[in-house]
Image (cartoon, rainbow, N blue to C red):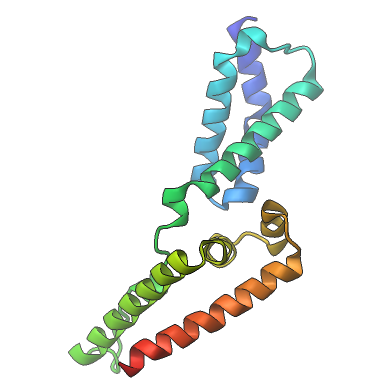
Length: 176
């Protein structure tokens, strides 16, 4: 195979690869990185590929993009980081929040949330992962259900129970 043929394949399917990965990771730049990894790997095995079969190449690129994106979402360091939205993490300055006391309360709330998330991760890793994927990564309950081999209803029940448990844990901490 010549490099010209591979460049044609890259030009033709690059956006397809990025779009396939973005549906899973929900981040354009990350999807671009995943696409680059896919095409780098294809370039490494270019001698074993039959570039005349367009259908096979498109299918291969699609599956590689989706699988790399799923692998990224499953990475342990990604799953176990603390996810707090910018809104929750930042201190809003208004008349009611300018006092030092209110700023300290907001900081304490964030520390409690981190503590409860860490406790959930240790106590029930599966519910923690499902919560993170749906609430923070924005994955659909259907895709999470398919990934874990459970029903959508089961996923929704786990999210509901997890949120109730977290609320109780936060209330316990505030009473201390």
